[in-house]
Image (cartoon, rainbow, N blue to C red; front, side, top):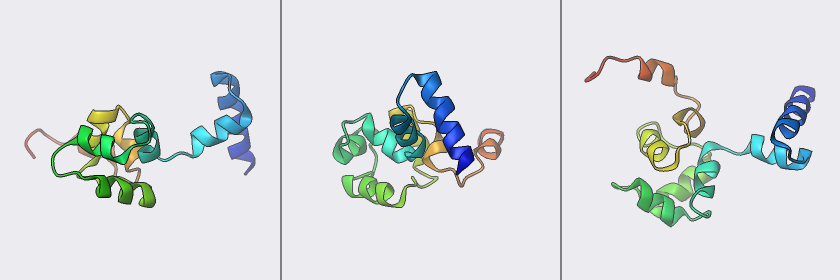
Length: 102
């Protein structure tokens, strides 16, 4: 708890925000941040990602707080949010270092 408070305090000073705003920014999931870029609209995000992604998929990701690993790169391309935030359970360094075509 103390570490979270210190992180939020430092973040607030760096970003020149209030402590409450800093807490909110730190606590947001990657999919919440991605959705913000589309005015909070799951439909707009689904359209931007394209392919077989539908509004219902985005709503499910929002509830679970995680984008599936197979879709995280597509969402990252559409939003600019790094895959590391969209699905933190995947070791993306391993994926990045895989040989091409593997």
